[in-house]
Image: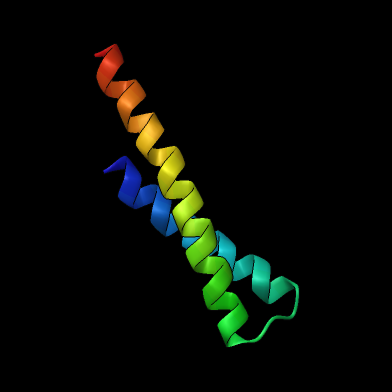
Length: 54
């Protein structure tokens, strides 16, 4: 669940960042995918951490 939420938040942040920089639609999609992957990886580590602590 953490991974999915992190990916969605990352995609939204990436889309917004590219829009602020004045990127085209393809730039926004690229940023959204890159940020989503990065945040999802962080979410995976957070999930592992939470499960190990419980």
